[in-house]
Amino acid sequence: MTSFVFTSVSGAPGVSTLSVGVAAAWPETDRRRVLLEADADGGRLGAVLGIGAEPGLMSLAISARSGGLDANEVVEHAAPMGEWWLVPAPASAEQTTAALVQSGATLARTIAEERPTVWLVDAGRLSQRSPAMPFAASADLVVLVATGELAALQLLPTRADVLVGAGCTVGVVLVGDSDWSLSEIAEFCGCDVLGRVPLVRRRRAGADLTGSEWRPWWQAVRGLCAVLIGAERAAAR
Image 1 (cartoon, helix red, strand yellow):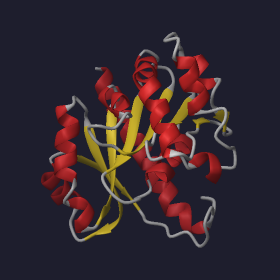
Image 2 (cartoon, helix red, strand yellow; image 1 turned 30 degrees about the vertical axis):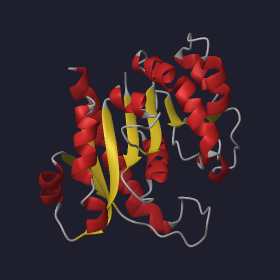
Image 3 (tube, helix red, strand yellow; image 1 turned 120 degrees about the horizontal axis):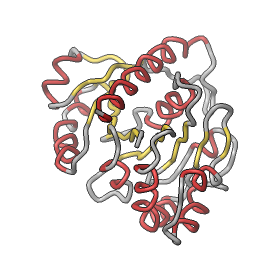
């Protein structure tokens, strides 16, 4: 498998935006990249990116009831986004949760069996009871996204411990500045800090990621992609 799950412990530190950035910036352009939205609180990417929610997670969950999905069938329920694909979730938390309860385990098995594709999963706020946990348990790496503020950082050790106890390999990505160094944060939370991305405050809702203020962010995301490729190769050994 080649899969990375992006999640947070609290608030909205930019998990969805970061997962979109990784999908778009992934340097291995000969490999198919698929971003699956699996946030039990409901999806937002279909609306933000202007593609709607269908085809997407709901239609995929119906197909998964047969239990015989392969990677190509998953992509049939995805929208092409240029060089990558998106499986959007419905905005409704109830619908998304129902779809994940029905199909999460099947989809996680499908991802685990298909290495050539780079699978990215936006799991939102992931808890031990989340229906998105099967993705985390089978991923190469679970990426915990957090701001550098104390209120967010103090939640990292407990969440990291829960995920490690479930068999996950965990790394942290910091968003914005912090009063603590990356090494101090790594020691505090008990897992690697993969990097830091700058916090970009959007001037308007729905603004794209192409303005000059996003250039340092994209540079950091490309660096994160290189780290993820290294983690993938290490997991394959």
